[in-house]
Image (tube, rainbow, N blue to C red; front, side, top):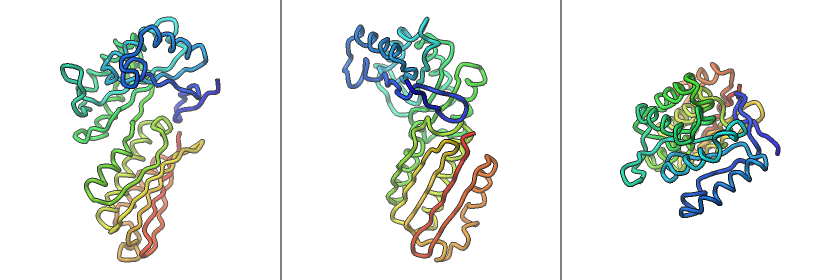
Length: 280
């Protein structure tokens, strides 16, 4: 089976990944354990190397299934991805999001036990927690990388979440076409790209008088590019060069990573911000 590079730090996986959620939760309504285990084994034998699960699937039971089948002799043949980010209460119900550092540590240690492994190949934040700064989340995740318990990190739907929050807060329609989380660069670069999107949306809300915003994130072989475009008044209507709208800060953020940031603005025709960040 062909392989794909995920990010720019050396993680490679089969072109076809396996989402494990439906094996014993959600779509299957419980499923048949024997059949689920056989399906996982068949996938490994067919050359699939990337298997995705999460604590909330079951909850917990999906990780246990993956651990039973993919642990032991098969462990070194596969990559296991799992996710945190929900508050799971008694009775097994997910009650909102929770990415407090203490909770992340508790969840990751629990996932390692359920997965019957000493490391998680790819750890995601499943949903953004608006009450916890993204830097605190990524910093806590990084602790596990330094400890050798996690190899690679990811953020799931962070830009989509920010766009939805922006739309609810401002009433300005915001649409996103985004690369998959695993197509984004390493955690520092992914965080920088996320912050640039945040800053661009803040400028739109404060200055653009726009009715529509689009965010397009694309991946090339060597870089990830975010294009934020609005239909507002443009700088020609009083915005000047844009340096007073956070552009200098955005340029510095991208420049530290060896990337580039460009801005185009036409009076009465809106503004486009293009941020390109190298993968490595």
